[in-house]
Length: 208
Image (cartoon, rainbow, N blue to C red; front, side, top):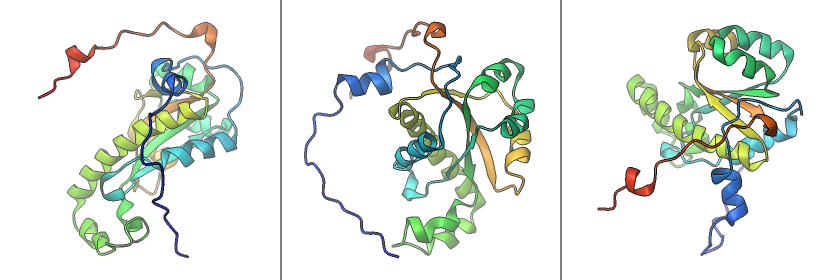
């Protein structure tokens, strides 16, 4: 089956309005306390439908997401969390395990149909695969957080877990390796902290 790609679109835009910018950036919080409202399969699907459009090197798309939402899934995940992250992860309606597929090159004929021979190039170079997988996976993770916010949920990205044990619990075949976790749900308004200061343009940016 051939996918028809439509490149037609608007030639100019004023960007997001203030409401959209606030939702994704200026009013968004990293959330550690969640309301009990459940997250649905449809919402998780909507997150990926947005996040999958993130840029990645050569369109290689190494990010893989495992959504942990059931009691059984939480029981597999929680023992591998650092102590300070257990309670908030247990309370989150869903948790995304954001991982990188070390064999992403197997999808090259699909995602780069004009250069299928690159699959063999990547297959022969473990270091290149690892480097590009980590680089592109990190970019995709940033977009994933924005996608969570765009569908009306709050995100709580974090480290603070035993990667090797999470990998063994969820990816025992060994080719997918966890990178970040992200708690998902509706933030509890009563427990939101005030926004921490951000660096100003002049403190973080230069124009040359």
